[in-house]
Image 1 (cartoon, helix red, strand yellow):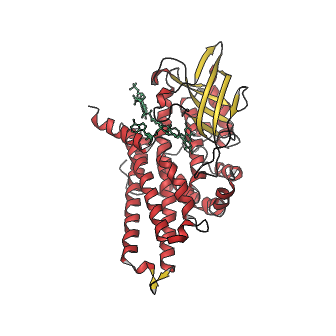
Image 2 (tube, protein in one colour):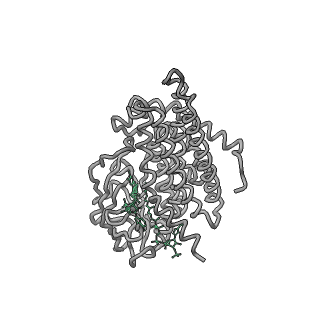
Image 3 (cartoon, helix red, strand yellow):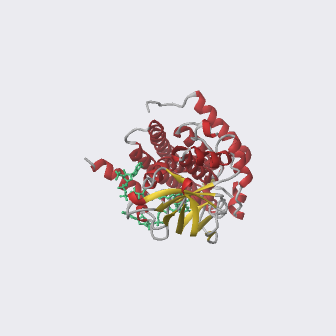
Length: 380
Ligand code: FAD
Ligand code: 2MC
C-alpha cells in the first residue's frame, strides 16, 4: 500500500502483457469489432501466459499475483481491445471465486480447465428485474436430495452461450442479501438455455446473452461457500472486477491519448500543425493529467484489495468510478482532436469511445459506486 512505483517484477509482467497485446490483439481488434468476432484462440493464448488465472493460487494452477498486477495486465491488453481485455477479466473474477470459496472437490473439478481456458467462465448476478439492486434477485434454487433445482433468468451475461461455466447467484433462503447462495452451473446441464446475442453499442468482440435455468439440477457439491454467503462472495468478486474494468478504461484512454498526440503533430490547418494551437496543448495536458491521477488511485485501490485493507471496497468503488469516467472523457477529447476523422471507423478512436461507454454501467453503475462510497463515509 505504500508503493509509489512499480517493482521490477511488476514491470516485467506489464512488458509481457504489452508485447502480447502488440502481437496478438492490436492488429486484429478493429476486425473483431466490425465483424463481431469472438477471438477464442487469442484468449486461449493469453491463458498460456497465466492471464486466465492471475490471482488464482499456484496450488490450483494459477499464477497467484496481486490485484495491481492484474490491473497492469488488463490495462495493457485494453490498449489493443478493451472488450477482449474485459472478457478475460470476468473469467478471472469467476475463477478466483471458485478458488477462494470452493472446497477441494469443486476446485479440482473446475480449475484445471479454467486456468488453461479450455473452459471459460461467466459471472451471473444481474436479472431482468434486478440490476443495481442485486440483492433482490429471484432465481430460485430449491434443495432436493444432493441437488439444487434452479429456475430463473440472468440478464446481460457476458460470454453467455459461448462459455462453458456459469458462476451464478441464486436464492436459497429469505428475501435480501442473506438468502443468496453461489452455485457453479455447467452450460450442458439439462435446462440451461440462452437468449439471442444482444446487439450492442460496443463490446462487439464478446457475446452478451440472457441465460435461463429451467429446473436445472445442480449438485449441492457445486456450491461455493455456505448457504447464504453468496451475496458476500459476489461482492468480493466485484471488488477485484471493478478494478479491472477501471484498468480497461485506463488502457483504452491511454491508447487514444497516444493516437491524439501523433495525429495533432501531423494534421495541419491554418498553415500549421494543429499541435501548435494552445487549445490543443491544454487539452492534451488535461487528458494526460487526469488519466495519471485516475491511474494512481486505481493502483492504490488495487494494492488495498490485495492487502485485504478494511477500506478496500470503498477504494475499489472510488477507483472504478474515477477511472471509467476519466477514461471516457479522455477518449471523447481524443475524438474531438481528430475532428471528423475521429468519427470514422478508419481510425480506432470511435471503437474505444463505444467500448469504454459501458464501463460506467456494468460491474455496478457509477451511481452505485457513489452509493458505496457515500454510505461508507457516513457509516459511523
Ligand atoms: P438499473 O439498475 O435499472 O439502473 C438504471 C439507472 O438507475 C442507472 O443509471 C442507475 O445508476 C440508476 N439507479 C439505480 N438505482 C439507483 C439508486 N439507488 N440511486 C441512484 N441511481 C440509481 N451482469 C452480470 O451479472 N454479469 C455479466 O456478465 C454482465 N455483463 C454485462 C455486459 C453488458 C454489455 C452490460 C450492458 C451489462 C452487463 N451486466 C452483467 C449487467 C450490469 O451489471 C447491469 O446492467 C448494471 O449493474 C445496471 O443494472 P441495470 O441495467 O438493471 O440498470
Ligand atoms: N465485500 C464483502 N461483503 C460485502 C461487500 C463487499 N464488497 N459488499 C457488501 N457486502 C456485504 C455487506 O457487508 C452486508 O453484509 P452484513 O449485513 O453481514 O454486513 C451484505 O453484503 C449486504 O450488503 P448491503 O447491505 O450493502 O446490500 P444492499 O442490498 O444495500 O446493496 C449494493 C449493495 C448496492 C452495493 C449492491 O447491490 C451492488 O453492488 N449493486 C450493483 C450490482 C452490480 O455491481 N452488478 C454487477 C454485475 S456483474 C457485471 O456487470 C459484469 C460485467 C460481470
